[in-house]
Length: 312
Image 1 (cartoon, helix red, strand yellow):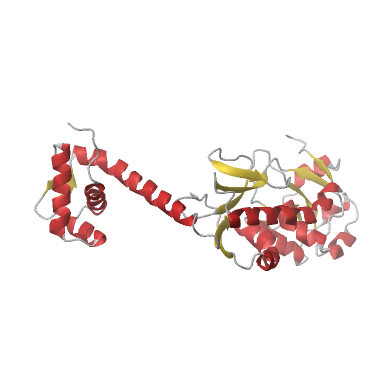
Image 2 (cartoon, rainbow, N blue to C red):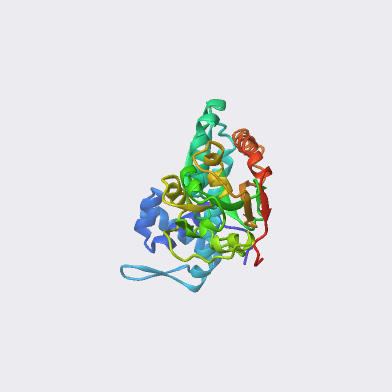
């Protein structure tokens, strides 16, 4: 039996037939006649020296050899398609596709995009706001920005600014609750979007760190950080604000942090792309712009006391 690989056209015909379990549907997908597709599969079976399909009256089914080949063939064509898309993207110096979580997109990226667009008018930005972990090659994504306490060794990963959480609220609400103890009686909002962290940081952790133990239970709970922050901006209550998502509101005075003590999250947002792609013109420009934007509000973090959660 020869170890030489069979022709790619024959493998492609087999892959389509195995996915559809129909020669007619596979032929339609590949835009060939059923006879031409059947010929390719027969040539593949001759190359193997064994049948790949059992031909039934009105259907086909895979033989053991066919089953052994089908999974690898499907994965191989997916890998090849992804590699081809990646090669095509290296020739595109104008389009930049970015995926980030809905909260980061709404609270960090969107309010700042005018500045990037002004500085890079030839770059066409496309955004996919999603928490789903993307395959950057398969999904045609150039850059992913993800909040995590770990990174993938298979990707270029640039950790962004240190992340913390601390109570933020409107200036009017802050005036009503001037001390940590008085905050026990304030309307509190609960952002449950970072409950996945190995060391959770919530209201009770912050009160403990401040030496005023309190374990609040009542108050609106939000699964999305941006919704919790919007409620705080509307004056509904105080929220444990995450650095990246409240920093612009703090810098511009819509929110205030009357108690300059924050808790470290042990996690960061990271700038991710396929290794080797970080030097592409539009990716490098986007990365450098993000770093410059972070510097603009760095003084807020510099003026804080950042503590580890008391139960860490």
